[in-house]
Image (tube, rainbow, N blue to C red; front, side):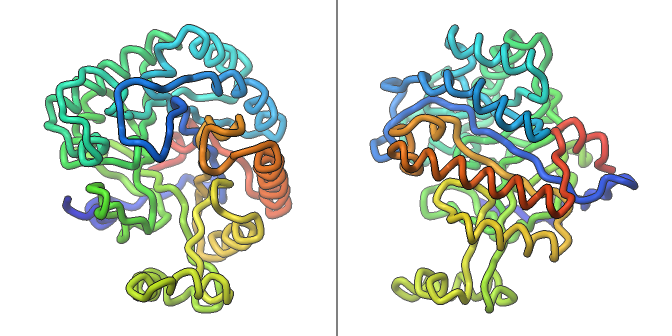
Amino acid sequence: MVPFRPADGRPVTWRDGFGTRFTVFVDTEEEFDWRAPFRHDGWGVSAVAALPDAHRRFADHGVASCYLVDYPVATDPAAIEALRGIVAHGRATIGAQLHPWVNPPFDEALTAHSSFAGNLPPALEAAKLDRLTDSLTAITGTRPTVYRAGRYGLGPATLTLLAERGYRLDSSMRARYDYRAQGGPDYRAIGNAAFHTGPDGCLVELPLTTVFTGRLRRGGQRLYEGAGRIPRGRGVLARLGLLHRVALTPEDMPLADALEAIRVAVDEGVRVLNFSYHSPSLVPGHTPYVRDAADLAAFWRWWDAVLALLATLGIAPASSDDILAAAT
C-alpha cells in the first residue's frame, strides 16, 4: 500500500483564539476475541451499557467525546438506546467506524488483509460504508460527518468515498505507526498536525497524536526505526529513558509516559492533542488493556491525572464541531 504523506494535503490554519485544545475519540465497537481470527459472528455489545456513565464522567470535565460507532453497535437495540441517551445528555458526537469483517455486505474473503477496509474493492468498501452511514443516520436523524477506519485502514479510494457521502473529518491516520506487516497502511510520515486532504482538500485529517519522549527523542522516527532492527532494541531504549513512542491513549501507555508526552507535544506546538480509547475497555475482560478490576481502576486513574494536567496547562477540550469550525 502506498504510504500516506502529509505533503499530499494542505496544513490546517487555526482561527484566531482557538489556542491549544484536546479531543477524545472513542472507538465504539463490539467485543470480540482479539487473539482469534476475524469472523463475521461471535461478538457482543454488552460493554456499551457502560458508556453512559463514562460519558457523564468525561462531560463533568467539559469533554465533548466523539463516539466512532461501528455496525454491530449501530444496529443493536440496547446499544442504540444508550447512544441516544448520550446524545440527549449533550457533549457528544456520533461518528462512524468501519469494521469490515462485521459490516455487511460480506462479499470478501475473510482475511487479515481484508480487515483493512481500504484494501477492499472500492465498490465493496462503498457498500459497507453506505450500510453503516444509513444505520447511524437512523439513530440521530443526521448523517455522520466524522470517520475512522477500523484498524486505521484507509485505502486509495477511502477519502473520495467519504467526501462523496458528506464526511468532513477523518481520524484514521495514526501518526508514526506502520501497519504494512499486517497488510495495512504506512503512517510513518504522518505527524501530529491536522491537514486538509481528500478531493479538493474537503476533508480535515486529524491524526491520532503520537510523540517521541526520552533523552534521545530528537532522533525520532529515524532512531526508532533503527532500534526496531535490533532484537528488543526499542524496549531497551524505552527502559533506559532514551526513546519511547507514546500514543495518547490509556491502553498500553503508562501514565508517567503519557504525562511526559503531553508536555512534549505542547512544547512541539501540537495544536490539537487527539486522545482515544476503545469502548470495550470500560468493562474488564473485553480488551487486552483492561483485564480485571485493577486494570479498570488504573484506566480511570490515568484519565483523572491526564485531565488534571490538561486543565493545569490551560488546554481546553474541543468537540469535532469545534475543530471543523476552527480549521481553515
